[in-house]
Image 1 (tube, rainbow, N blue to C red):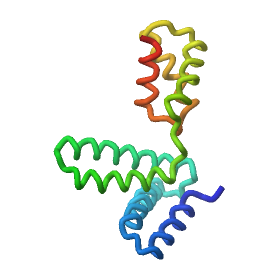
Image 2 (cartoon, helix red, strand yellow; image 1 turned 30 degrees about the vertical axis):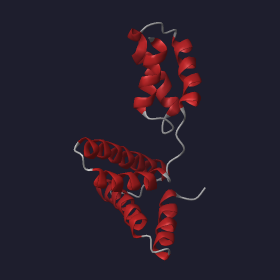
Image 3 (cartoon, one colour; image 1 turned 90 degrees about the vertical axis):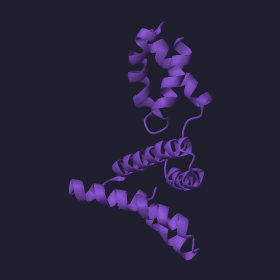
Image 4 (cartoon, rainbow, N blue to C red; image 1 turned 60 degrees about the horizontal axis):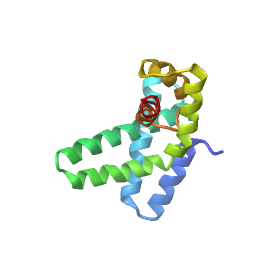
Length: 148
């Protein structure tokens, strides 16, 4: 597999050749966040660290979209949605609820959880298994659904 930073650079070149300024700008924002983290840490980042930055950027975009829609600024929310789509293109595919359910059920059986009191135990068991593949809120909702 190609290095994520190289993938971003290749995508940037492709967007520039296609004169896709929106995509180019979104990729540059991602590269900027990565470069800032490298400067702050005074070290070159590996793929895992770059993936963490991309996840954080995607989370920021989701939160911003929710705030903008709540404020009735749908045109700016659309721009954020586009940046989110570009960011998610570089992230691994997220688990669907149907794929997540057996993992959560297995964790519930593993810890012997029977009520919401054991939710923390279940979450601690599930999260390492789905790290980067499922959003914490989605896991939380699934655990609540299955324990209640």
